[in-house]
Image (cartoon, rainbow, N blue to C red):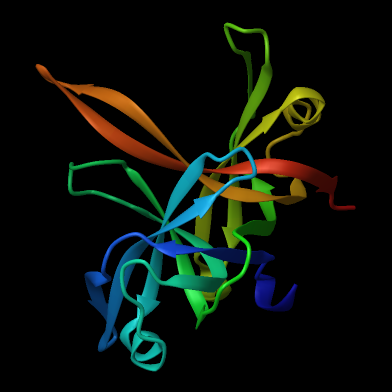
Length: 202
């Protein structure tokens, strides 16, 4: 893995759910964010926030309702504003194309397990394992990505040790939940990697 950078390859195809809006500026570049609606085979819709530089949107101008394919990687950063989720997950676009094709949500990751996996069972008896994977970028930074696995794969993930390097295949999905804040309840969205395949790195 060149320069210690691990695999982080994401491909999405769906519909732009809202007009792109300015997210932030960094090193003189302006970045925009927009939600991409991607349907699963089950009919459930994931809404993934896509981050793209202005230069990319100048070449491929997208608007609400457009069908687009996004190729890039999953990024995370810590939200210290006190508002919303503490860990913010986005799809960072390296390629953006307007085209019509079937919905797609495909992610391949290679990273290091950075916390002990948490194995649990749902009230309906399904086995689940939660993991946190650290995926190195260049220049010493890393993205910390929550992952969830089910069934037999959950048992395999639960047996992993902190510090192990693993290769995962799956999808980036969204999940809404209610959080109590003081006297009020807020509807929030969490993002996680739904793991379909796993390989231990020898």
